Picture 1 (cartoon, one colour):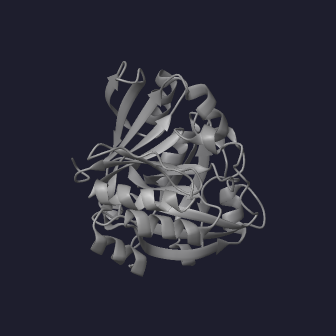
Picture 2 (tube, rainbow, N blue to C red):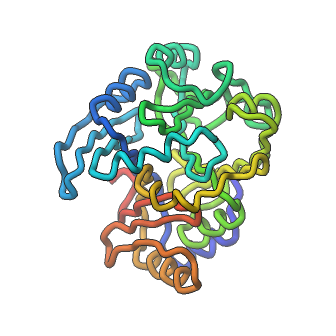
Length: 312
């Protein structure tokens, strides 16, 4: 793993993201969404909250060690519209990568529920430069992107190599499309304390089939938090086709997906965000004291930072 100098400097100043706590996704029909994620993808329903303090209904699902929250509120119909964008290179694109211990079994189970495919010709075996992973992109009933991914022996996090009885076993990462990878790396490293774990350029027939497009050339950058490398954040910087502009949709996509991160030193992070905003950058909505911070990256992807350890 390589650690960026800016990420180290952030750690020295105090305040950094420690690890992913959960992934939140807005849906329009809670019962339908819960049925899809449980029946098609092997998640287990933990609890349903009929109405929280904001009036939203929420279902908490688990898959292995990871947590997915499905939320319905008054803004759900508008927030879900952008998820139907057909292009994998859209700035609004954000997928959750679900690990398949047994790809044929996981894919067969998924197909029984007729998802809308993004990838063409089923699961795609990617070249050795990518770790020879097998992957398949598709959409849930609301149009939100998802990915099934299988790691062969010796690749990925060692936790994915343990013997499992289930066909799907956890969440490896969330991938977001960004307009400028260098700008995004600086944001996540300098302000939030992430480090660059790997970087590569994906192209060729396999990548075209995975994304359901032609001539794909994309930078894939894995960013890891300070205390936990899995699940991690993946930046997708498309060189071709160029990412679709999101100027009209940035405001609407906020809240459609949100990653919750455990962090330390929220006051320090808040101060860095405030300084960045003073420099004329897009404002981030941040809370006072140690209450959660709601943060938007330069492309409008949303994060919620909560003080504490990832498993808390």
